[in-house]
Length: 286
Image (cartoon, rainbow, N blue to C red; front, side, top):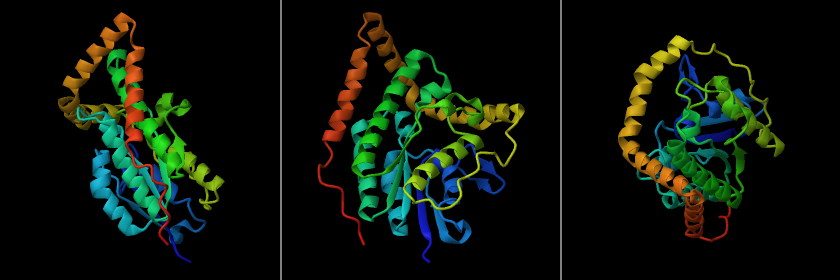
């Protein structure tokens, strides 16, 4: 019996940041892989191509060729948050890259897994003027992912909202990446969607953590070392623009014209989707 080939593309979320194990990082995709077939140890070939910090350009240019070479039966593509955290954010470019990636795997006949994600500003607890622009960007990415998921008949997970977002036990010290419980939650929800289509035939991942949660001291140490460096790198790239966006946010709210910002973002999403090819979904390659 041929194995089920599962490839995972994306950024730090899929790479397993927040879910450390003795041999490195695990993450939701690895947890899901174990439940895709009844005899998971022998019947599933899982390859994680995700890289921490990856943007949609990295997924298109670096991860896609490696993923296509694997000819996966199931492939997850979860990316876009890092694009929102860069001053070069362009929803049109994000849409075009994701469309190209989705189309390539659809052309091979792979089952595509996608997800809408919560906005980073809310997770970090940023003040409204700073959180607003990031939330608007993430909503734009989510809208594009949602539309393209329908076009390519993806198994789409709505992970942008729900009780798990506000449950601190689900998140790691940096508040941007799920902890082990959060990764298990994502794996469980994807497994349920796949099982409903009779694609996942193995047991669902356990919701119970395998390892003890990091202590408060360990979380503080991470924030003081690796976490500080992470924030500094992002701020160097994004902060000047984010401050300008926050000032614009405040001006519009003071004038009572805040709705214009949402309309502008919606128009950008519509233009991005309209600019994509209107060809039919590619026929699977047999």
